[in-house]
Amino acid sequence: MWAYEKILEYPIKITHKDVKFAKFLFSQYGGPDGELSTALRYLNQRYTMPTMQTKALLTDIGTEELAHLEIIATMIYQLLKDATPEELSQAGLGGYYAQHDHAPFYLDSSGVPWTAAYIGTLGEPIADLYDDLAAEQKSRATYQYLINLTDDLDIKDILRFLLEREIVHFQRFKEAIAELQTLKSKQ
Amino acid sequence: MDSKQCNNISREDLLMRIREIQFLVIDFNLFLDNHPQEKQVLNEYNKATKQLISLKKMYEVKFGVLTNFGYSTSQYPWTWINEPWPWENGI
Image (cartoon, rainbow over all chains, first blue to last red; front, side, top):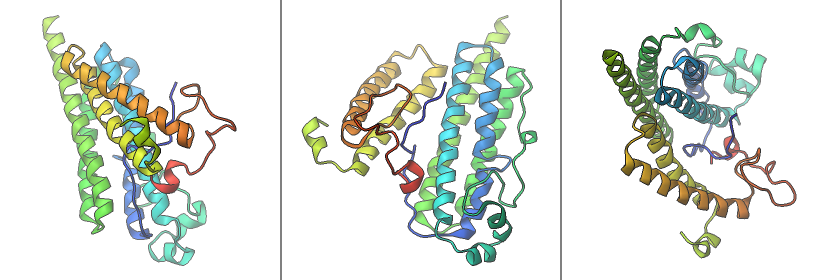
């Protein structure tokens, strides 16, 4: 069971439309290393985790990633909200508008639709946890590139929060791997 | 924050307060998943959680429920459908 709360994990203050940046942000919505990929990756890998700690960790980080997916969707929604079809078209989102109007959709920044092929579940906990370490680093790097692509301080601030969360998740996964390896060496 | 202070606080400020405590709780939670024996962190988690529960209660009396599906009771009429939703105003 999941519960929804009517509060964002981090507040979003977007004061003006920015179609160009919204297009870049899709990388973290439906991109290979975006929030949809990380959330679905962890929530699917948890079923075959071997310890109490790792089952809980994958459930909780997967859940937090869903909250980050909502933050990205909210940013895209607000950045596009008042854009005219002409403005969308000029920013390279004319084709997007023709299919989705102003709704967010699971595509990357080049318009490629999300696919389950982006993520993996081997069912082997060490392999899956290393995959998660890589996922966090790729997501962190993508946030850094997005920060480099904007001068808007409010947007940079939200992206920095999300980047820092990826670093925390990376640390937690690292601890989980170390713990599993200690257990293994005792067997 | 006592209930008197809460009477004057804006919706946005109260949500910000809730968000700050919730952030602590999330971070402690992830740490505790790996370190269930860390008593001091667990105490901090419980302390922050109590504060979070009471802040949410204050909020819900004033502005409607934050959660549904039996996590909190609603005033009449059903407040769950109240706007704005988080993506509409970014809070």
